[in-house]
Image 1 (cartoon, one colour):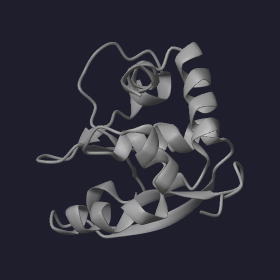
Image 2 (tube, helix red, strand yellow):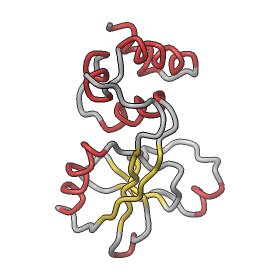
Image 3 (cartoon, helix red, strand yellow):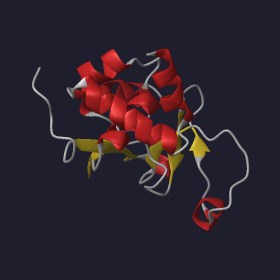
Length: 147
């Protein structure tokens, strides 16, 4: 298995091209709660009914998708009448690559699966998960506990 470089692997933002939400970015469903970001207060997320996605005016909360997961997302959005375009977003760290993959995953991740998909040795996956755990990312802690 050939390892990809830890940095520089592109991720993609999915941007809506049509309708009243043209120009918005696809992100995780917003489930409510306290919002203190003035930009999000002024222009809140719009949940897409029947999906796990919402549309954000800001790029920040958007999901960074790996190339292999884009087709599924685009198909799901197309079925709901949305045309999309991809905006390349350069990835800066293995930790952000892991978070992006886990955010779009519909099943429980394993270190073995992350190693296969990211094409990075399991030792690097473990080290990145430990960094994420130290930053308070609960899913990383759960994954380390399962391994």
